[in-house]
Length: 397
Image (cartoon, rainbow, N blue to C red):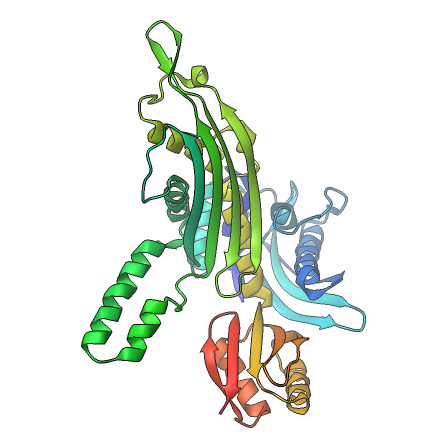
């Protein structure tokens, strides 16, 4: 699977424009120790870094220390001396005995430093990587003179930023209204099962859910100077991104509470508290204020996309759930999964013969391909009951 990282590099690196340099092909391997969740990202990081070192002919390993894959993704893919234009994962594996993950890549490396507009790069990358579907939820506790509204201000601002980035946005209230209409239609047509499913709202709508928690206060109207009226506002925002179908946290970003003094911006609409709060939220979430250059909504989206890239390159973690499977069949299945190409590792998460047993795999296989492997291994004793991108549930046939 190839990725045009001349697009991807702008993801973290600011306002740059691509340099017209021919790339050099290199084959490298990166390894990392630890549990597969963290080691796989570090192994890819090191492979990309080694590709730059070999392709540019310089030692960049001493330039920076990788502490977090998402935060250091820019330095993995570029330096002052060279950057990865594109790469392809040629093999990957996890040695459970050594607890070591290995990733081999074929990369095209160009010398010099790339330049690209940050937001444009995000949009192009999201489009290229099969845009993830996103739903935004927010809980807002803002005291003071602020009118209540059905539409949360943070949700509205985050949806605007996400759309500019190129994500597919779904609003929960709109989805619920659609499901209600389809449920009513199903009832009229006599399809009671479909009506119940729509009413329950259990169908998957988004890949990621962004959860915002906003706390703040809007001060009273003040007149610090003759005929000059202002309001003070304090706001803090916590952001989380989670996989919708598993609830796993992908990324978090905290925007610490900041006191916005009215005298600092006297041209703001002091007589419209809701618009005032929206203005400050926009400044904070977009990183327009210096205090939020590092922690903002774009940073959260960058981490989401970094996770999206890793899952598409190295494979996603997929949970396989089995209802009432005995230990012998589970052991046979695990043995087959471990020998299956494009499955990097297999974990037995839980065994319960009477209820559900859980096996987790890392794979680039599609849900349909995983189902086929399981069906063959268990001789079609189980059928799929629920299937999403990251979760399959099997029940006895």
